[in-house]
Image (cartoon, rainbow, N blue to C red):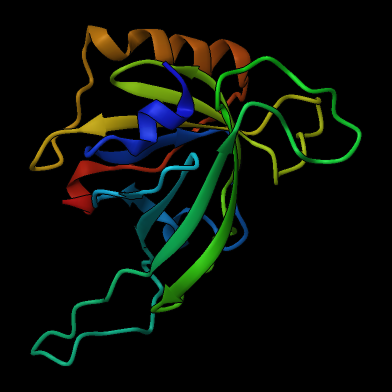
Length: 187
């Protein structure tokens, strides 16, 4: 399955783990998800909305209790069969590279537009290399583990996702992977 096939489906996805830390720390970017159906275009391009929870957000609902509003952004994501960054050799990967541009961002969304390479992908999950991030000090790739979720955002953490988890652990080595989706905080 290609990255294009994975993300163009009408499913919801959550970022389960990543092999890197971001500026601001975990509390500023937990529960990252793509909860809505994409708008799919003919030319391997789609619009996708991402949201996350920022525990230190100053954006609040004007209701009793003042719950925080989750930052959100919509991107135009262009999928291709090769890396379009300079000095890279074209690969034969089927639509596994993504370059994105912001369409809009709201409520303090502060995560860069995705520039990705899908390294492993199946029906339930994907391991994605974040090309916009530099490799860590040991030269290991910066990766994300995305998992398809059910209607009520129940995680499909079963034998079906073991191949992705194994690939993530061996190919995107980090001694302390960051758990991004924590059900007790995200639901």
